[in-house]
Image 1 (cartoon, one colour):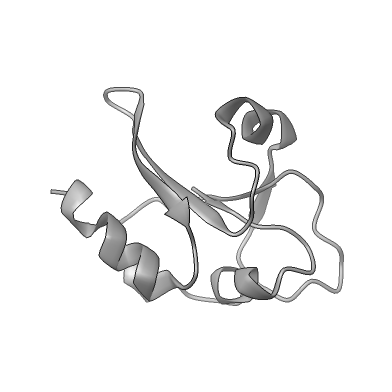
Image 2 (tube, rainbow, N blue to C red; image 1 turned 180 degrees about the vertical axis):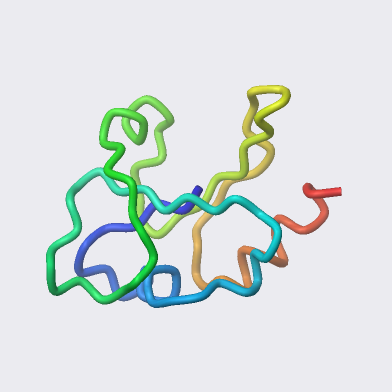
Amino acid sequence: MIAVKPNCDGCRDFLGGPLPEFDGLDVVLVSATAMVDDAPGTNPVVLAAEWMRTSLMVAAPSYMVIDPARGRVLIEGVAFSPSQVAAEIAHHLV
C-alpha cells in the first residue's frame, strides 16, 4: 500500500501512470481524503481514511508491505520514488 494525498508533490510519481517497478505485485494507492479532480494521475486511489487512522499510516507519501497470509506488516517507510520503494521492499518479497 502506498499512501498518497491531493496536492502532494512526492505522490506524483505514484499517481501519474504505470509503475513497472512493481510488476507482479498488487499495489494499492490509499488516501485519507478524496482526490480532487485536478490531481495529477491515472492510477486509482482507494479512499481509506479509517484504515489509515487505525494502521497509523498517517503521512504521505509513505508505504507499507503487508503479508496477507500472516496478516502482518513486513516493512514500512517513506516513499520518495517508485524505484526507492522497490529497492527497499525487494528482499521482503522472496
